[in-house]
Length: 205
Image (cartoon, rainbow, N blue to C red; front, side, top):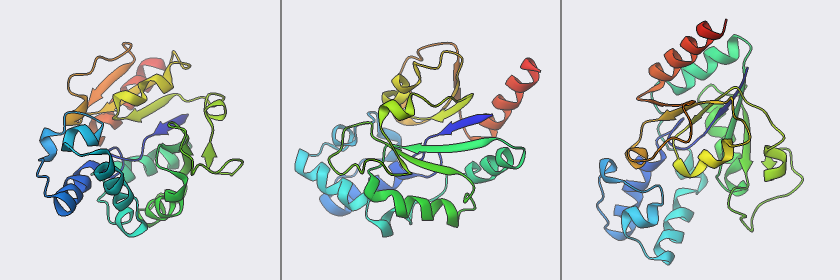
């Protein structure tokens, strides 16, 4: 099976780290549980320049490498790889974050997982014609059986795969979103994600 896995807030605790960064840089104290919008500029009440500064800080290599693993993520992904599944970690991080992101995966035992930066937002820093960057047309030529995602803003990137089963990692900012189809399932943690995938496999076998 081919499995799409988002990086931030599915494999590592990025938003929790950004709550600390926002408080350290700007004195903005917003508890993680109160992050109601995936757009952190809105959630933290930042100006555009403050938001840019926060994002630059949060994507420095040493900061990226400090992010905590989401409990159970790496163990589950390695189980799937061991049984022959192909794992593609597809992130909206800028290409400048690739090396640190790749190193984080390797240091957490996920050296066998592929990593791609998907140019979701048309960033100027996007490096074309590389092995690890995807333009949208490249991404849309790929096929997946399962996906693990937390961001409602990313759901539109699954519209070309009507049979895709999407495990939505439960986060404060996706509590009120409507799922596009019945193929979307909310999961509280990686144990639930694993169980859901196994249940689907049993039904289809």
